[in-house]
Structure formats: C-alpha cells, structure tokens
Length: 397
Image 1 (cartoon, one colour):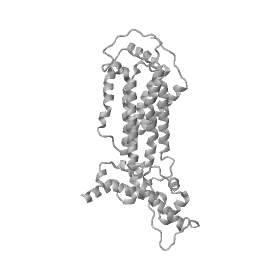
Image 2 (cartoon, rainbow, N blue to C red):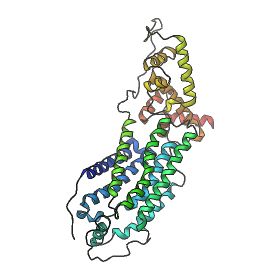
Image 3 (tube, one colour):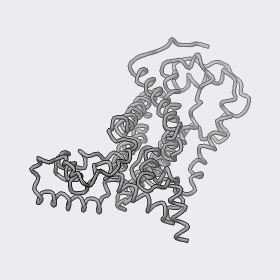
Image 4 (tube, rainbow, N blue to C red):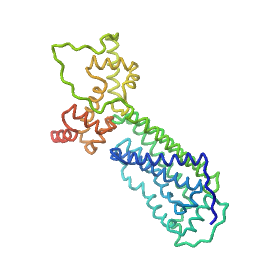
C-alpha cells in the first residue's frame, strides 16, 4: 500500500482546534446540572457530531488516515444526525420539550447506521481503496476482496446530496420555529433567547449552500477541508455565545441573607439623600417601567442587568437603582427576584404547565442556576418550589 507523508498547514490547525473545542462543548453541555436540560443535551450531542465529522475530515486532509485505516468513513452515518439534532436544540430551547414524534426524525440515521456495517466490516484493502478513491484519486488501487456487498441500499454514491437536502430541511424547520415563537410574543420566552438562536440557525442554514458550492469544484471529497473549516468557525461561534451568556462574570449573588427589621425609633438614612431627581422624572420612569413589565416581561431574560434595564428606560443605572430603593424599597436583585418568583408561582400551579420540571421552570423565569432559583424561592415564599406546587395543586383540586 502506497502512503503519503503527514500534511499540516493552517487549515489543519483550524480544523483540529475546532474538533477539540467541539468535544469540550459537547462534554460541557452533557454533564452536571446542565445535562438535565433537554436543549443542553441536544446542543451537546450536536457539538459531538460536528466534532466527529470534522475529526474524520482532519484525518483525511492531513493523511493520518493512512495510519488509521479503520477510521475510514466512520462518521458518515452522523451526516443524518446534523439536521435533526440542530432542530431539536432550537425547538427544545424555545418550548422546553422535543417536537412530537421526534423519533421519526432519526430513522434515516438508523437506516444509514445499519448500512454502514457493510463497509465497516471489510478487509483493510477495501478501506485503503475507499480512502484513496475519495481523497487521493491519483494513487493506484490495490487488489481487494469483499466480505459482502458494500452498499445494500445502493444509495451511498448520493450521500452528499442527501446530506445537503437533510440540512436544508432542518435549517428551514429551525428558522420557522424561531419565527413562530417571535410571532406569538413569547410571554414566557425571553427576547434574548430568540436572538441567541438566530445566529446559529443562519450559520447552519448556510451549510447546504456550501455543500452545493464546494462539492462540484473538487474531485471526490478533496474539498471537504473547506467544509470542516466552516464547521470549526461555527463551533467557535457557539463557544462565544456560551461565554457571552455565562453567569461567571455577573455580580448577581446566589442568595442574599434575610435582614432583620431596623429599630422603628431610628430614622434610616437614605442611600441617595443628595439626589437631584425630581418626582416628575421618577414618575415618568416608573410608568415606563410598568409598561415594559406588562408588554415584554424583561425580568424573564436570563441576562437582564441593571445597566441593560436602565438603557431600555432611557435612564442611567445609578438613577434606576435610586428609584427602586427610594420608591419601591428594593434593590435591583430583590426587585428582579420578586417578579421572577411570582411568575414561577403561577407556572407551578397552572395545570397547563404541570408537565414542566422545576428546573425547566427555573430557566423559563430567567435563572441559569437551579440552585439560585431554589434559594430565592425559599427566601421569598418560605417553601421550596416542590412544596409550593404540591400545596397549590391540592388547593386547586
């Protein structure tokens, strides 16, 4: 068997780093408390599938496959998981559940997985010929024998076209799901989540067009490294979006201790005693805040902050903080928790949302951390969410 030396360049580096980052994100989303969320599980599996496909392309592009011939075409069945997993991620991110009859979406993957056994279980000569046929057509074939028919479906020569169609269909379904959520106003969904889904969806929608553009320009699969480079960019984008939504750099405390009531004989000193805010300005901002709460429910956004809320009210964070303290008697985090927990109470006792898990309700009302939600709920109601749900459903029965 003729082999070629290892080939490493900038494209190889980009693809390799994309594979590594995809594996990291996949494991990240599938482990710990994150793995209990259905959208995180779909996202994690999608990242692992991207890494598997890119990993095979990396081996092919760098000629490492000559040394690992058993890996030839190992990721081919995953082509039929790309579309369904991405659609599942978007749908479950919006509605906290998988689409109805979701298992039917995996039938093409199952069929191709069964078909793949006919080329996985073949002699090494067959795998060598398959590799040079797709990546190095300039090299001569070697004699081979087959254990059995290599393609029982007789569709394998259409794998690129079928992948293109699958990705196109599911990209459209994902975009339609986002459009539907936007049109419904999404009283329980944050505008931030919709925005965070649009960019990945459009990036995924470009995949079938790239396949249609790249494949005709190269013999066999020689141009796959360009697709793998784009996949790496997609993975990097996902990493950026994950970091931008992270709670790590936020100042919101997990819980605040209960403060005892001050002595009524001592008049408390106001925090903003020297403020120049007029009552008219305060009333205008309060009115605007009330309208915003009623129409958009900004407190449900997982990344809402004092500066962001102040910007939407056309005031400064300092003045908004002053207003909440002086007129409502709450700091920003207390104000935020009050509205979030009130919404959670409604969801916990509403029969239409009785199927939701408590962690899913926590996410719906804006908490990225289930422990922060439980702590805030207990602090404001003196009950755990589970106790409150049981009590509420009994009273409504």
